[in-house]
Length: 403
Image 1 (cartoon, one colour):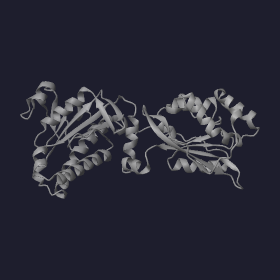
Image 2 (cartoon, rainbow, N blue to C red):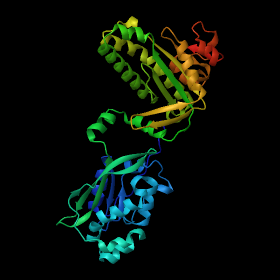
Image 3 (cartoon, one colour):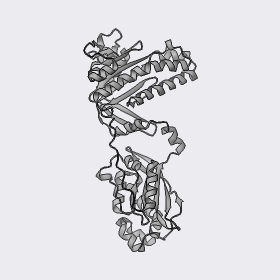
Image 4 (cartoon, rainbow, N blue to C red):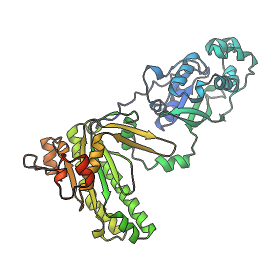
């Protein structure tokens, strides 16, 4: 499976104490910078750099430059924007942290003035040197993340080099949300799925197999069961469906009621055939799972039926939608609407797959699924006895077969 190209970790600082700190922060997955005693930037963690989105020239970490230099200022403006784009914020930050930088700068004010951004040089004279405390947390600021402005907080940790000497500074950054909230949002997330979602952070055209499933006769079932019982059933169903998609290397799409949407990208599956195979495999694996869920929820298995529509999207425009209320992957394209029409016609708990999807399968993948492509026959969607008015209107000539 090909996901994002692995990010190459920056070289660790030459100083062994700073190297140990950098390695520990990087291994733990923190957003963090490491500065040397002269407040020069010597390391930035992988997770922080990945969060920039673009790790090209515009956001290349200026290792070796002073934390208050022109180079670091331009880097922070390009990578994080937010508060860093404001000259007033930068001056206020220098007034706040400049005393600590002055305290550990050999040569005092004159030397510090040579290293920093000229827009800050007039402030040097008003600084009073102050030793950095073991830990301090300035007030939160804002950064740009996935195109949105979000609050973040920083913690400055003094790194001692022995005998009370200053070895450097670690700056840990995190979103303003507390760990209990972050854990509730992401602790149970599958890491592979998060990587696939990161791949589609920037919307683009991506060939993919599409799966749409829905629980049939859900309204009568919801009226007959208690609200608590129906909610428990629905939650188990959605969790199981998402797990099947994740296990097959897909990306979970939006949830609408009892509906399931998933995308299987050719670029992450390795080929168009592998994406189509995974799409079909998910629909098949969910069938016995739904029966197990019904029994656990004390719902008669005969009352539960899920229908699936499977299709190929050659020109899908896929991207991640990140808001203050949710994070999900969506797709635009006629094929998405067509998949919904196929799904609506698959009444009776059937799985209908389009001819474009089936013919994406290689001979070996078709054999794995038990599909004989040379003998497969198709029916136009508009000719099905179960065809809906919308299917006859919008997609009557899509050829489908039952899988």
